[in-house]
Length: 125
Image (tube, rainbow, N blue to C red):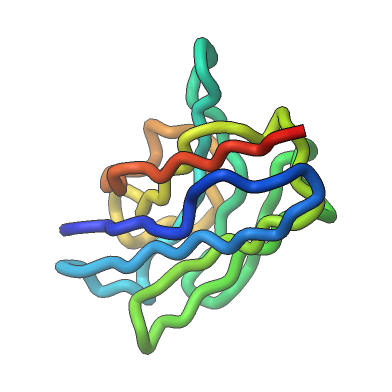
C-alpha cells in the first residue's frame, strides 16, 4: 500500500490550497481515509476523515473551513483548505484505516494503518 500526498507549500493567511492524496495497493473504496497534521513541537492531531460512501467528520478546529472529498474511481482523497490561519501550519498526512472494514470514522492515529509521507503547509501571516 502506498499513499502519496501532494499540494503543500507556502500560503498566505486566508489562502485556499488543496491537498491531494493518491492511494495504490488497496481496494480504495473500502477504506476510511483521513487527514492528520503535526505542527512543529506538537503531537500529530486528527483533522478530518471520510468513509468510502462519503460520510465525513471534522475536528472542531477546521470545521467550516476545510472540506474533505474523495474520488473512488481515481483512488484519490482531497483536502480543500480555506481561510487558512498561521496555526494551520503543519505537516499534513493522509492515512487509510487499518482494516478496510471500519464501521465508523476513527479519529485516533492508531486506527489508521497506512500513511503517506506528509506534505508541509506553511501559512504566513
